[in-house]
Length: 242
Image (cartoon, rainbow, N blue to C red; front, top):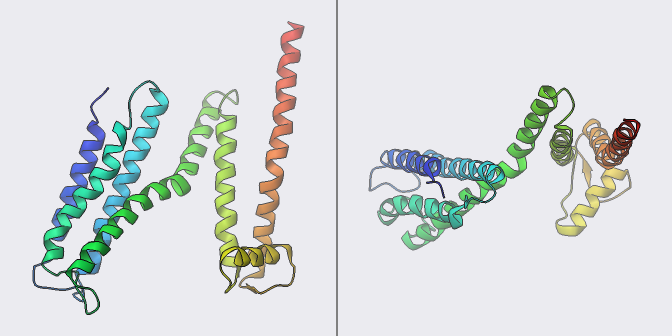
């Protein structure tokens, strides 16, 4: 098993950056000080970025070396957030995050929750937003280098994931509803289909774009499946002629 050099470097840089940021907060202030919010945002953002970088690196190594214990039993996914939280503790005990309705114990619990959300948020952001872009770029590179002989599946998968993301983002901007849960989802589907319901169309143009994107989401897998079948049939036919 190789040493987790990349993970150690990323974790060390993250902890140093968080510590430097925290040192900008003198003991004796509270959460109403204008310096507290930017420092906390920076610290949580640094943790989220580090979590995403570690996951991406370990995933790529796992793909290349499937027999290697790449993930180190998840050590960095819980050790790094705990280390960041440990750095926060002196400032939390000093009351830096205290407010009228939040005492020291409340700040300790709230910060632990924020650290957990930041670590998970970085992983989710990587999977939802960055991964489709990288998959598409890698697929396009392989498709270009091999002159169309390889990378088609990866390119199509990446583009399809990006299409799904675009449909969800544009859809959320085109119509809204005050309902929540399954009933709220049903209202947005009714807006998509043009049926009457308890929703508000924020932008009719974006709503039509959303409809087009959803049609592509449904139709493209079928089109690509048919294309793939014909391509495989053509390759088999060439082999038989030889």
